[in-house]
Image (cartoon, rainbow over all chains, first blue to last red; front, side):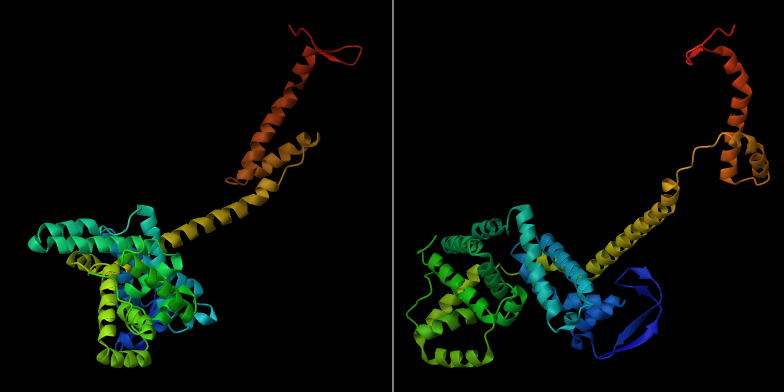
Length: 216
Length: 177
């Protein structure tokens, strides 16, 4: 766990210079829960912020990538996700249930999807995969027809995913992009695990039909 | 590539789709893996589900994306602290404006009563007190007011000279020259 000692330094959460408590990580920040780190950050420990970001940045990146057209967009969306999650955490920390394990991660997942969707809506496009595919095809020689067919299947499926209901799409993207178990998908989307599975199976049946050419 | 085959064991198809898209519960996973070892149709179906989800998934992370994500923690913390400073400044400005408004409110609400006619007589005494307390704004105001009052008093005779009271009680401007 974390042993704390008093030192002087800046207040990380508020950006203010004033004496504060700080802690020394004895057994590694990796053992502390998200909620403990969050509480430490809001009490003034900047390293807790870095630890939380490092712990979840892969997940957040995976979730927002679908909506980002450029690599810089992914980083910006990931940053926006963390800032919103910390702001939401500070507002809610006073509540008794804010220390509930897994709550911060569920916030992150939900916020990441919303940040990504808002971004996609604002810029009016999703990932620019076509340009990447064309570059790949142009340099692939004899494999070009197979690559083009795969690109066409990907395009059809991407269109089909975009055409799913909001809940089905959210379940599928959290599952496929985030690699989340259904329990976490359900927590992030505030539904039961069984309900998440039902949405998932309706969605993948439809995607399967699209791929088979039974649906467009 | 063709769509996933539905000829596999019906009860397994749902689990195969879950397995291809992400983690499944440990108990279900063990039974499923055991089934896959002895069922070629389900193995083929599993491969087809995996192919479908590989198409649904976004392409692998590029080195450019990796580079853009480097230093995310430091950048996010710096952005958080900038935002906090802005909020603190905005809160300070609002608080100051509120205090000023609260301080100004009594002055705005206070309406001075109309000066009674005998105020002119008492004015010189007030003016005298004011002259002993330099720097007090209210005194300076009183000082100016009394000077005007004194002038009006001295002009009363001249003005009255120019006015003639007619018989019906109406005032008319006469020739003072």
